[in-house]
Length: 84
Figure (cartoon, helix red, strand yellow):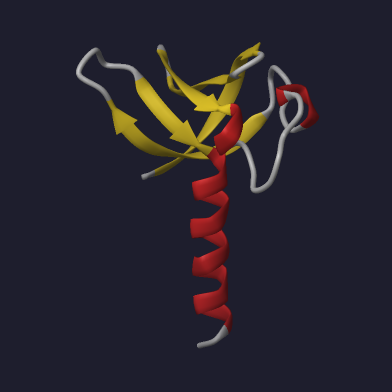
């Protein structure tokens, strides 16, 4: 499922994004966008609203997010609508 979330914290390894009130998930730096990302802040900043896809909720309740997957899925849906 794809959510619009708010970036709450930036770390060297990724961004924590609040997807529902009180529930943050981690979008690892490798899941921010296609290609190499040198710094998380090159892509997102605290307070940004971003579209993310929930990849996994582990057995400890941690949420793994992907901005890259959300962008790809939304682009695919746009192409499908355009071809109709």
